[in-house]
Image (cartoon, rainbow, N blue to C red):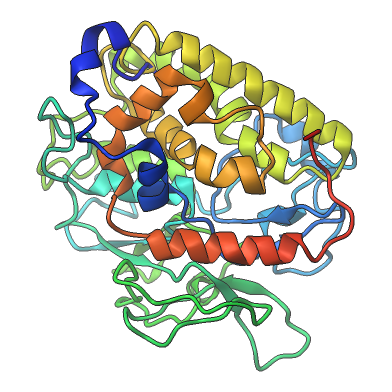
Length: 403
């Protein structure tokens, strides 16, 4: 991403009136899913995103553990124990005169706030006041055009009546419903005001929505874009959804002039994505999902180098691609804001913290802080963290970095 505001240019704007970085992380970013599954190496894994992997040649080495149809990203590792993300299944596009035409109030977005990819898609919808300390909005303002639902932060048995079906996944609840324990029966996690039940399909689980659309992929992830007119899934790839939100609904957007994918910066964004996505966005998951020490060591080294590169880049410019906020900033922020509170502990990315070791990345996160939806999701974060810790401590063997 282009950079946060350069310290030499924007130092005065980073004042003590803004929340501290730990407060920002806790309030806005650390909403990890509260359930998942441990891999053979003892790593506690989560699933909620779908992004194409860099090298499709690895596809024949995937799914080495799970024979069942219902799967999660936890199964997506190669024979060396390295995490290899698989392409999303639903890749339809919204376009004029196409099967899925842009219309107001036709589409519905399903998200888990724990997921950085889903959170980025949701953030693009909204136009919060005073988003930018310079007074400029960084989101499209489509909240009156596209509806959305937000799941509870715990994973629950999606088919509890079937003893042979042990799938756990995202569930919907109403705010102020009774608290839920996690899938192992631990904890008590509130149903807070951030939850938005499924008003379109009345689903109890995200799995229900996929099955209603006849899904055969078996990976029930968010973000998920639904067409209310044809009663089917449009797309579950976060980058596709961002692109469609960016350009296909400008007729109804409050900020139609905002372009997260400017043509003039296309080459710069692609060049930045070539190292930010595999080494930072996906890099934290490569660390956390590693099933061998070798896979972890490679991922951790790549992540540390990319963070240092981003730190240097953002010492010179405000955004990843210069002076313009792009989709690369949206994606980088959603990873960085979770880094200290989430990834350092649970994904063992302990090569330093943003607050203590990367001052330019810290200022960058403060500058983009409005995108996180601060004020919602504290319960999501704490539920997820406690749940993950319970599962982590239940294993005797763990892939880890040196203390």
